[in-house]
Figure (tube, rainbow, N blue to C red):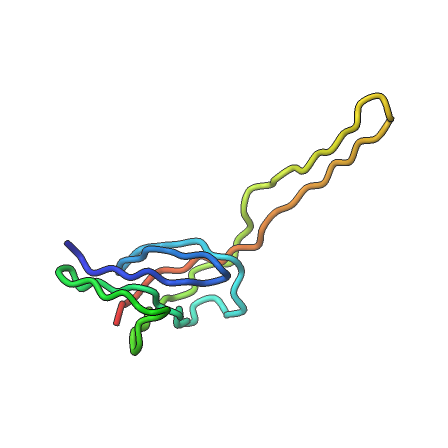
Length: 104
């Protein structure tokens, strides 16, 4: 089994391994820069699992910013029948694509 970690960013948790590509909520970082994902909630070296309370002390995950994209368009539609009321809104979430470099 390969080494993996569970990291938290923007209130969401992701299970990552080296060379994984993940899409997270928009981060204020330039394309090509290296970011450190913290807190790390759990780390496994392939044989032993370390779970933090709430985070693992000294653990870090570094990732490279590959791109800034937008997610699919989501439609929010409300309607009240026979009242002439309807409201339609669209939303596209700003995302950052990260490539995991190392788990340490």
